Length: 195
Ligand SMILES: O=C(O)CCC(=O)C(=O)O
Ligand SMILES: [Fe+2]
Image (cartoon, rainbow, N blue to C red; front, side, top):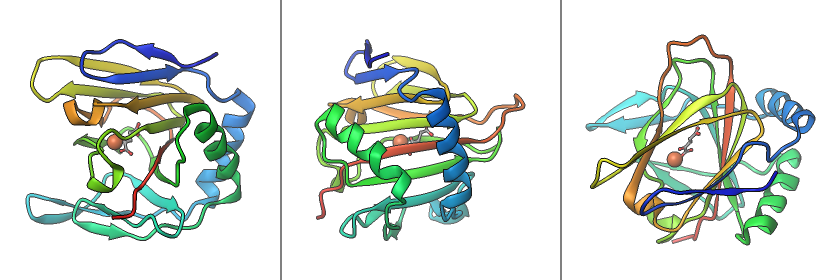
């Protein structure tokens, strides 16, 4: 299966429901869950710090420190198992990805609130390649100015690419769910331009 465009005004989205073969996705899920130094990053909301409702790890080349939600994250070195993934994405998308934010959603309570990946160090029109593993969760996008919305279920082994003006015009989120869902790991590969 190859990436197909998802039509959405003012956005540039492509999606492959089965970018990874099932066996490769299974292995990656287990190895990342057990091998990544998961941390509970703190996020600032209305001037107050809170533990974020998920576990995370910022991974990348040594010059990819990332300022996010009021904190500066120094990258952890690349685990060997992510290198073939990074190289395949860089090749397929023509982007020299140098970092990845890994998130672990332990169950349906874990989530990510509305945001755009529009930090200055990502540049004006970032390509963000999002690989999902484990439980299927709903990913939602909402236009900043119009009622335009999109919801898509991201299954095990899928790839969602956000490019062009997507971050400028849309926010996205991974909502909480009351359905009983298992663990999910999401990897968002990025290219940081050191400032
Ligand atoms: O978990 C997801 O699918 C979204 C993650 C995300 O938006 C991010 O890491 O910036
Ligand atoms: Fe994001």
